[in-house]
Image 1 (cartoon, helix red, strand yellow):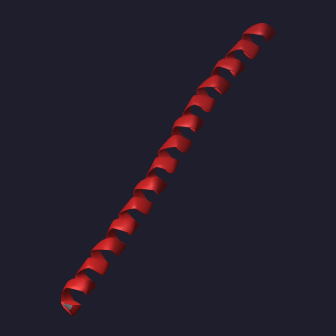
Image 2 (cartoon, rainbow, N blue to C red):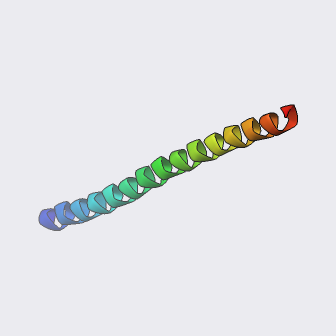
Image 3 (tube, one colour):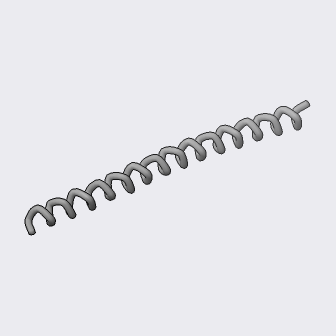
Amino acid sequence: EVSESVSTISERYRTLLKVNKALVSYMQNDKKRQQISAINDIQSDMEQTRLTSD
């Protein structure tokens, strides 16, 4: 019974680690997407400023 409990805890812990890893990856990728979007917005604003000043 104790070994089954330890086995169950180990399984659940492994599952939790997988979920945690997936969540961290998602958050890192989302942060990169946001940074790229912000850079694109800045570039677009700079281009618009350049076009209106010409």
